[in-house]
Length: 282
Image (tube, rainbow, N blue to C red):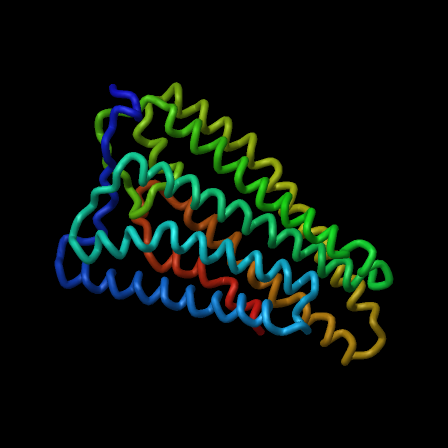
């Protein structure tokens, strides 16, 4: 057994050994990254330039696009490099940075989805208090809290994961560095320690999920009480895109992390996870 700090590098999962398929994966990853850059770049430009979008929802959408860009720029460039050059190597520091940034952006993204749910709840259920509850200062504080939560969660798990003693085997079962696959390299005692930490940190995110469900129950009840069908349609059109994004984000995450251990990771699941924000453009 050797300590994780003594490992100079890790070996990422080789999706295929055939050169033709490696190039196919290169073009796939490149297409994902360009689509994400283009789509989120358009969102950022629209929100920044159009004064009609200078609203709380537009502000949170801008932050959500930043988390999406950060997530894909953290994982995909290394996958593009490895697919093009046919290599699997990632250095110890690169792996630690990739795990930290990926956890940071994913945690912040989930927080922003929860905040945007609160925005829809206030807009539909408490419209007279919207400007009071979601003023510029309140929006700034909520955004700061989301980024801070993501940073602290990423720092906690990255520090704890890379402090674990690992077996000499340094092969990861994924094409980017993430916590579950690094934990598989640790011995059983320390594995239980990190598993306990993951379970403890899951409570705030479970609380966010419960809040989202409760909020949408209240939203649907309020919408169904609107007498006109046109009013119901307009109210639903403002919250259903966000609900679709939340569902895709959570379901894709569950599929990625709760699948059977022998199931190989699929690149398209990462693509689906990073492209859910596109629904918010409609």
